[in-house]
Picture 1 (tube, rainbow over the protein chains, first blue to last red):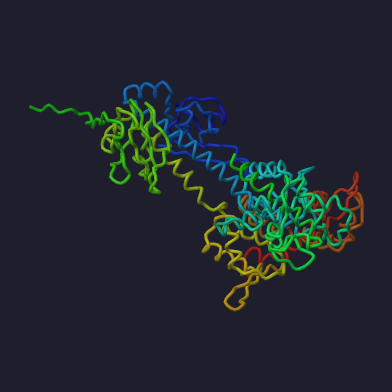
Picture 2: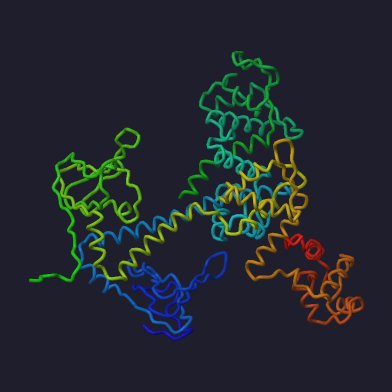
Length: 311
Length: 304
């Protein structure tokens, strides 16, 4: 196939089942690369282009144009089939295996790109919110920041925002990100960072029992009319035990079950305690309502986030 | 008598009949080869932890060992016949002799697929961005200002976020400190980092991005007249609202030779923005952006 300078050979996404080999000249490939505009690649003599079109009938990967007078060799599916017919069957099996392995590597790269982009995205949202002390951030500012920090594509940034929206961490409206609370993104980021850097579960991740106790505490605190100066709320031990019996299927609270939350300074007893003493001897428990709320929310989100990213 | 054959000699694959329980391949002793199951059933077993874990079963037509032979990737599974089977083994010599008979283009396709897969796999460990200095500046612009942070924490966190190597991070930190965008100080054995003005780092990121994309940056392309206009607008009351012609005559009184083209450029650069139909106001954020860029030009360019 002879092409003159400037002549188009094929268009990106066209249906195809042939392979090009550049025999002489120079072919320029253009492709739409989301996030960073158009991308150009030069193919000189000896280059092969679109092997997946030949093997699997995949659409053209690039728009090809001759940069100078060029000659291309076109290999068709028929030529491939004729060649393979004369060869042992395992040659065809090797080709299939290699193209399958290439697709797996592509998919891993795509998934990895998304997973790797989450911490930078949370870092930028968290620090921007802290700096402005509001729960709003423009999507465009986030995209620009992410691109500069981690080379994240617009596609991946949008996908992550979508996932975080589905989980209720934030909402995107009129190109502005609103977070459900000022702290939730920061806690989420710190938890992921802790796991990655220390190779162990963050102290923010609670046991099922602790999560249920805190949820019960929040439920009682919401229903209680006690004032919450500075975000501190108080719940009487009786109210807490009664609600635990109801919502935790007859679970009986003891000082032993409460101790891990007390030791982690999430709940504070009204008096000094001993894990062997009856819980009724403590008159009430108090805690930072927003902190507990964010922590319970984090524990709801965390396992779901991992699943959503992988899927 | 010469009875030579000009064709390449092909080494045939080995076809074997094996009984159930026979170990076809073992990672300790096995020769690298592609194993094709023709009849029966094979089982791939992982014995790495001392236990026997069945990883997958092979059925007629399945094959393993391609990556091991073509890419020399380690193959750590034991392949055992779970039923009486017929197996074809293609060793390195056999494969090479057959590959030599393939047309050049088909060999090139095999090589291209292998190369692309290898590249994709290797890229998983590459830094997230090619411009690590811009990336670090973007990271530091998000740190709290006037706060001392141990440099080791910064290197650790930034390295995790971007996969940039510690040595490169250290060099980039020095480059930012040399531009006075960061302050480094010793506190005993620790080195502390402090960001005095995150806005300068934001400007530096914009400069780097713009240089990468177009080779120049708008604030450093201003003419003398545009710089005069910028200074004039910076001293103008930000609440003053006028239509275009009034702005033009207002600026003409202060800066000689201004024309409509310059007024249009002022709007394009965002120094004056339209508030309601036909009315314009100074945009102090944009003015500050350009003024700060000019004031810190040597820092941004790194020519201190």
